Each structure stands twice: as C-alpha cells, then as structure tokens.
Length: 321
Ligand code: UDP
Ligand code: MG
Image (cartoon, rainbow, N blue to C red; front, side, top):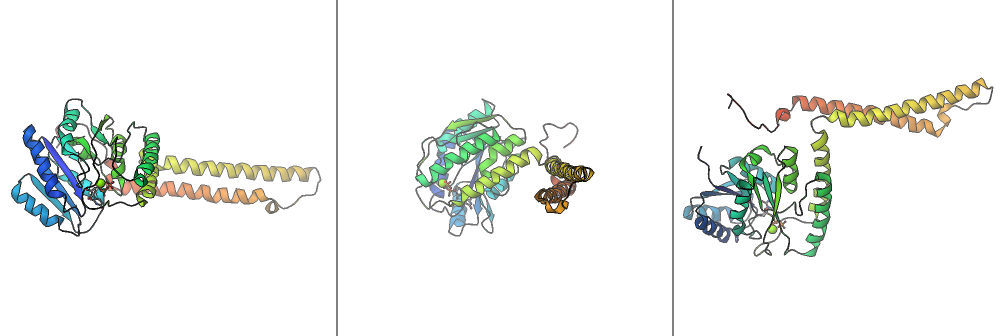
C-alpha cells in the first residue's frame, strides 16, 4: 500500500495566530525535501477562530487535514485521535504554538528509517520557558527516568517521531501524553532515541497548562509504574499484599493466643486478649488483608470482561488480516 513519507499530527487549542505561519513553514520544508506528507490538525475544542483558519488553510494546501472535537478534551485525546487517522510511514507530533521547529522534521524521519528507532523524542536542551516551568520539569524528568528506566532527558517534548506501527498500537488516555515513551516501552517498542531540538519562546497566545500539570503528572507516573507491571495481573499485586497482611494477622493471633495459654498453664493472672493493643493491629490487618484480596479479585473479573484484554502488540500475522 502507498504510504506517505510523513504524517504530522498537531493538537491545538486556541492557536489561531500560529497556524498559518506553521503550515507554510512545514510546507516549505516538505517541498525542499520533496516529501509526500499530510498535516493532521486536531482542533481540541478551540473557542477562538482556529477552526475557520484551518478551513482556509485547507483551501490553499490540500495536504492539510483536520479533526475537530466539540469540546476541549486535552492534548492526549487529540494525539490519540490524530494517530488513528495517520497513514505516513513516519509520524511526527508537534505543538501548534511554533515553539517546535519544522526544520527538525527531515532528520527525525531519517532517524526512524535509517537508524531504526521506534520512537525519537525531541530534547529541548536550551529552553525558552519561564523558570516556574523548567525547574519542576527537571524533577519530573528525573522521576520518570528512574521509574521507566528509559534514558531520556526530556519526556514531555511535543516534538516526537514514531514508526507508524507504534502510534497504531499505543493508546494514549487521560493525560498520558507526557509518558508516550513509557507507554511505547510497555508495548515492547523499546528502541527509543533522542534528538536535541531547537526551541523557541511562545510567539503568540499563552500556555495551556498550569502548575497542576505537575501534580497530575506525578499521579499518572504512579499509575503507569503499577500498570506496566501489574496491569494485566492485578491479583499478583493486591493478592500478594492482602495475603501478607492476612498472614501477619494470623501470626499475631497465634502469638496472643499462645502467650495467654502459656500464662494460664503457669497459673498466672491473665488479661483479656482484647485489652492488648496488639489485638487492634491484628484486627486492622485482617480487614485490610481481606479487602485487598477482594479488590484484586474484582480487578481480575474486570479484566475478564474488558474488551481490551487482548490488546497486546501483535508483531506479525499470517493468513489473517
Ligand atoms: N493543547 C491541546 N489541548 C489542550 C491543551 C493544549 O491541544 O487542552 C495543545 C496546544 O494548543 C499546543 C500543545 O498542546 O499545541 C502544547 O501546549 P502548550 O504550548 O500550551 O504547552 P507548553 O508548551 O506550555 O508545555
Ligand atoms: Mg508550548
């Protein structure tokens, strides 16, 4: 099947001023390299004139395609929807605000095709953003590096390139766009590279993310760390924790009971077991243990009815389509 050289997916929310400049710049680079390409704008419920601007751009440039959400759904949803529409052998995502440069596109494409990377992530080594953003970002990247064991300096760069297969197999939900390399790795696409990219200060409009991005970001990281390991076998996580607590409570009970029997056999004065503080710890452990076990069991049942349970990365098929 004929494949375009490049699909460029651009999620956008209220970026009307940047779009014409961005489109023309991409077109210039593509013509220079004689690439066949498509630009897929995903209009994430913009409340300004972004959509009519895109319609105008489409008149001038037939390589412009677009999807529009009725309301704002977030960058992850935009990327996910854009990915479903891609047909290029290499897919690149970039932000609409002109902070990423289209001049990087040819080299990103070359790294995927010739260096055989599954994913190449941009690295804004020199950033033009306020310190309130760059400092927490450093922390965020360090934590993500540790937990994902992927050696990237800059996880959240909007400019990234993928082999088509990768975007067809990775589902980006919630606000997981920050962790696409991690999602890809969990799906078995582990040849992940990095390229230093130019970064500009925002020319028009304002940033769409506030400081809550960091709180949400870290919560998502926790989810991913557990999901990657136990997402398909929750009982191994909850069951193990539950059993451990249960066993501990049994041990405590044996100790309390045994000790009391011993005292009795010695003819000594005994107190009620319920008067010992350890009894309450025992009680809590029993309840927690049973609950965790039950949660694990419920999770297994959920997994059984979930339509995505066979959502594994299929490498090849024969005699099937
Ligand atoms: N964006 C989006 N939906 C949103 C928020 C942002 O599609 O709900 C787009 C935005 O228009 C831009 C990209 O995601 O193209 C990155 O956003 P922004 O430049 O505000 O993020 P920053 O550069 O500050 O990290
Ligand atoms: Mg930006």
